[in-house]
Structures are given as structure tokens and as C-alpha cells.
Image 1 (cartoon, helix red, strand yellow):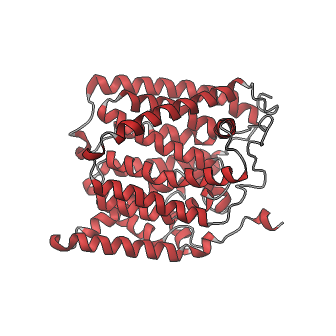
Image 2 (tube, one colour):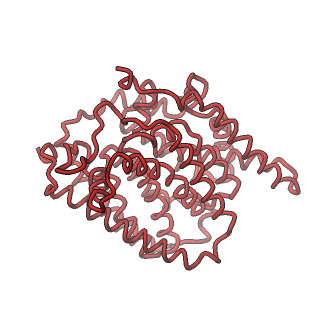
Image 3 (cartoon, rainbow, N blue to C red):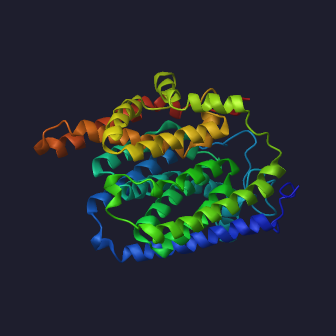
Length: 400
């Protein structure tokens, strides 16, 4: 089998390393370019991004670090990688850290926690591209900071942490490329899609769903961005890339893994329960989902149905297809099963942010800023206190 040997000369492993090098180079270039344009940025969004990243980092670093599953493997200190059954991306990323001379147990812990916290500024960027308001974005980020599944899994060796953060990066880069036509963001999109698929083959469906987001624009999104042939040509390139990546992923990763495909009955069941499971998780012990997030999401669905139906369609469609295609759900494995859906958690919380914004609209305009600040504080306190039990849950294999 191609991956069982775990050779550093494996062509798919080397291709994954090249992808990550390209991502690092373009991301660094975008950071340098962005640093020269700081004066043009809204300071409120900058402060929100820094604060959310810092809060997420502190919380995830404070949680006990553990394996992501009983069979979790990481890149060794020297020698070839282990069997890269579900994709070489995770090990390719760690091999680059090893080549830089910073690989070890401490580097593993720090890199995973940083990757988990990096989801916050990436989500902020994506929400801004979707023309989501500052208050709704702040509520969404606060809920993600304290989201038990996301926080707990970010403090593990799970390769899904890297895959889900890359997928959020894909969402941001493709939305930005489709709006501005910037070739650096488009190049990052082209590299991120295969990187997500190479990191975890089961993330290929969620990465594919992201590609439709810039093409299903609400009215508020249509006043800016590419239109006509400039957009369609870029979309055609991305679709062609996605098709070839999925074919290669199937041939070189999925088939050699010998992992059984989900049964159709499991897929139908998972799609049917994709939405209702969030209520069960919020009202069961431990509270893996914040009850505040679920209640706000219910209000957000109503608000989006009226104001932004295509955003609602993108959120709901992403959830239904992601759970249905894999034939899995958060229930009954909870922490073990949640790693497959780390990307869907921030997508669900988009609805919660819209609900917060809709309720905020009921406050008098002159008091709205104060009400928003108090509401965000209450939301964070409620979510953090409710999640304490979930933060302390241990995997069953840790006690065996």
C-alpha cells in the first residue's frame, strides 16, 4: 500500500509538503502587504480579531492536552512518518516544523493550540467578506471561543484541527478572491483546497461545499465583487482543480486506506438529525453545545429567512450535506465523533450571530452599543460557565 510504508520519499507526501510551503509563502506575503495597509483597516475589527484570538489561545492552552484518539500518531522526532492512512497533510506540516528544528512534544502542543485559535481570525475575515455586521461577528466569535467541542479538540493531537482551520482559510481566501479578483488570494485558494483534502480525506466534502459560497450571494453581497466572466473563469478553474483533487484523493488516499464507506441508511439518519442534534447536545449533560448558541441560532434562522435567505441556504446546506455525506453525527460518540465536524461548528454559529443581531435590533438605537457590549459579555459568561463540565471530559481510552 502506498502509505503503509510511511516513506519521506512518497510522492503524495512530498506534494503535500510543497503545498504547505506554497501556503506559507503566500500567507506571509499577504501578511506583509496587509501590514502596509493597517491605517485603512477599521480598528474595531482589528481589536476584535486580536481579542478573540488571544482569548481562544488562553482557553485552549489551559485545557489538558491529550491524544485525539487511541490510535493517534504524529511525526516522530526523526525517521519516516507513520502510516498516513487518511492523508499525508498533517505529517507534511509537522515535517516542515521538524526541518526547521522546532519539532518535539512542546512544539506539538503549541502548534495544535495555535491552529485551533487561528480559526477565530479566519472566521472573522470570512464573516466580514459575507458582509456580516460587527455585533453579529462578535457574538459568533465569542461563542466559538468557548465552544466545548472546538476548544477541547484543539488541545489534542487530532489532525482535524489543522484540516478545519485550513478549511476556514479556504472559505476566507475564496470569498476574498471572488470579491476583489486579487491573484494572491486566488492562488491561496488553489493551494488550500488540495491541502485540506490531503490532511483529512473526510474533509473533502466540506471543502467542496465551501466552493459554492461566493457564487450564492445575497442582495447585500452583490453590490461588490466580481461579476460575469471574471468570476465564472475563476470559478471554472477552481471547479476543475477540485475535480482533479477529488479524483487523486480517491485514488491515492481513500482506496489505500481500506476504510468502509458509510451506509446509505446512516447517511439518511445523519442528515435527518443534523439540526436537531444541536438541541440535544445543548440540553444534555455535559453541555457540548451552548444553549445560548442554539437559542440564538433559532432566532437567526428566522432573521436570515427574511433578510438573507441565501446565507441561510449556505449555512443549512453545509450542515445537512456535511453530516449526511459522512453518515456520522455528534451523537452518540460526542467528543470522538465531533472531530469530523470541527468546521461545521463555526458555520452553525453564523446563525447564532445573526440571531444576536436580530434581537439587538429590538433595542433603541441610542442604547444599542451599550446593549451590544453587555450582551456580548453575558453571552461569554453564560457560555464559559455552561461549558466547564465539558472541558473536563476525558476520552474513555485515557482511563483504560
